[in-house]
Length: 312
Image 1 (cartoon, rainbow, N blue to C red):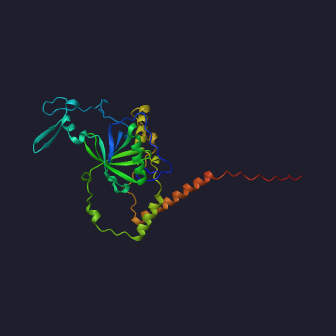
Image 2 (spheres, rainbow, N blue to C red):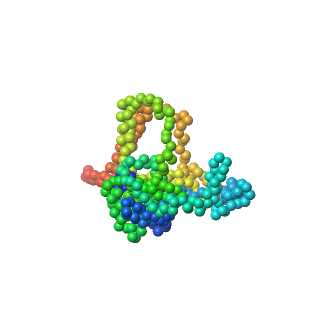
């Protein structure tokens, strides 16, 4: 089954909505004269431990106040408007002004074209949203989903969300359609580094050795095998402080700290570094293979001892 990046999964990917998911917006996908009413859900969430700021002397919570530079009063969110300044003049834009824009009133996810999956630069991708069909739109939703899946095309769409006109990519992820908000082309900076214009000679040997290293590291991408080590260690540190107080023994909590790299590190030429890297990978792969074979091999029973008659 085709997933978000056009790859294949060994098993069909089923996306299930959990009970705590709430739709953030309602609208309709429109392509041609077909309209598909949908609910929009945030497809991602932040897993970081939530930290706040405190005064280091007395642990008092630090809170920020919105103060007016003219009258010095603390201002509530409801009394704040947006503004734009140009040439010393300030234009104030109220919520009513912003809501009056025609594009802001639109609840349409308009399909403007269909393109091959690999033609969209991943650099343009922003936040992802799941689209759930309303009951009356279940059939056209499934029709569009299956069409995208079979043709291996991505729908380029235009929509407005949270006071911003957006470009988006409508794709298939398992049994659900995903709306991927995109940057506009002029929001992506061009990389202009003079050093990349300088001529660099790469030998055939270096290229071959580099390819061998890449090949030894090549595998199928399985995101489940990766973990956010910083967040795990941060949570471990918080739990240790809750148990032991402020004077935490970090070495006892995390073990002996690894030596910092750099400084007096040995400098190797490129070919030597590549050679050692390939050799290290081969040794690691062989050790892993030998370990697997050891686990799978049946346990051998010791040969029975021969009995000998005692003399006399």
